[in-house]
Length: 367
Image (cartoon, rainbow, N blue to C red; front, side, top):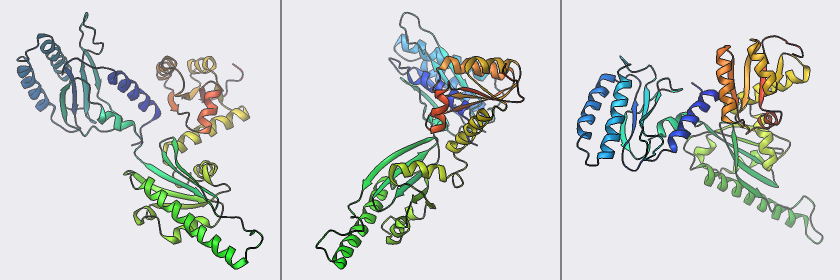
């Protein structure tokens, strides 16, 4: 199951809040109960932990831990069995103000992915890796754009494209300098070309061998250089085996990477970057035609309240309060909320026009 932008946003808010909390002693409780686990076994464990914690020497720490365990116990009494996807509970004093101790609780009982971790931890910070992993893109793809003059290697993960290496070749042009024989010039150029292909391959090995979640590699460029490089077989075989496409492009290097992203849609159609691009292309297409679309904060709010908005699109570049307020309103009117990043050209353009748009169920004119 692919996590939606809205789910990722809500989880990021929780993570951001919990990451800030630091306690003076081991008193913050992180509890993960995986899908299918017997919740009564956890309740029994917590009863034991409650008994053991009563022996903590520090009065302040003892009270904080006991209060947190009791808070978790009280929450678990509401569940006869573990929720379908598991449950995560975080308890402790989130504010950490000595003058005013307070025990807070955050419960995630409908996570975007199944919880598979079984954990009870009492620490000075909350253990968040299992939920952080839920919002991280799982698939990583490498993009290599090259010709005989330049090359670039980039990683595509989620909606992010990050250039990892840029290279320039020493191969001379096809016209030789005066005084050189054609045979000698051709031999020099041939040797430098071979060296260039090796340089790109070795750099790809260096960058990509360490990417454990590498799903595939797309190779692109405007000439036959990419096919010639592959024939040299200097790229490690496990990497060559992950090449899922070789695509002709008009550009090479960093400009070629951007073009390669556009032309890789058929190969990588399930990746988040392309679903965002498709959504925003639809939005801007409707905007150009003036068909069933609106944008701007107040206009979108008005359209939602009319029940006219099928999908509201929000930029992650908006402030948190604006996003939260529109989400609440949209859910009230059964309107789907989609958050888009600013990592793509379309996402950046969307933010520039305000970052709030609506795809309508029906035309509402100039209302």
